[in-house]
Amino acid sequence: MGRLRKLLIPGVDKKLLVKDAMKVMPDLMRRRLITGGASFGALALLTGCDVVDSSSAEEVLKKVSKFNDAVQAFIFNPDALAPTFPESAITKPFPFNAYYEIDDAPEVDGDEWKLEVRGLVDNKKSWTLEELYKLPQVKQVTRHICVEGWSAIGSWTGTPLRDFLKLIGADTRAKYCWFQCADKEGYNSPLDMRTALHPQTQMTFKFADKILPRAYGFPMKIRVPTKLGFKNPKYVLSMEVTNDYKGGYWEDQGYNSFSGS
Image (cartoon, rainbow, N blue to C red):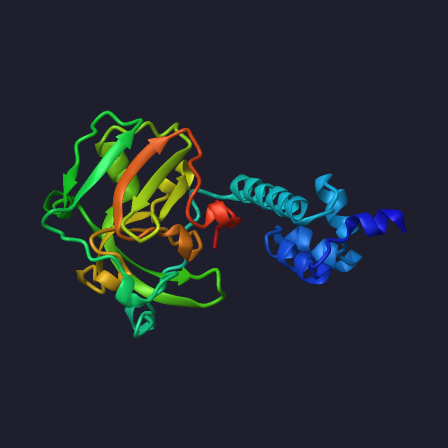
């Protein structure tokens, strides 16, 4: 009984906490814990942590989330493509998605905007939108999958990120491409290099064959169909190639950094 009491958190519903922890576990581990009857004891055994208060509970969730990232990164196939669809399957209207209302979406002046390039690259020049528009572009019709459980199919046109990384002489042995955006509260997000080099990962400049609208990330969105939606940064201001994990807006709040779809 002493051990059981030690695992309880005053004021926290233990069933809800376990349910939240299960959400960030790999599917195989989730099924096994459900089959065995998930409990605080199971989480403590899994992570080696005693769940005695809210801070230790947070550490448990972080450990499970970090393990989930490692598993997903290990099984990620950089050659496997996300499904593509005919244009007849495009979702209309395509939903606006953000942690704020559409009226609060950033308004970026495309004439003044420049993409800042930093970090482990040979050419650190900033790129105007006009210069980026001149790069070879391809179109993809792929599914956006939101962590909230909904999905939508859209048409995206732009330059493969791996082609741009090659153009600027990026060190593709580095671990991350880290993006900073114009969203309020300083939205930023890291992208692991293997995903950055995936053939479908794209610097997007058009939606439905038209200049990317404000609602979907003008002037540039990073389209990553192999990731959940929050790993597709919009209103991009800068990109840094780095070996340092710099966190991200949602990642710092406990979301998995890898977050494959």
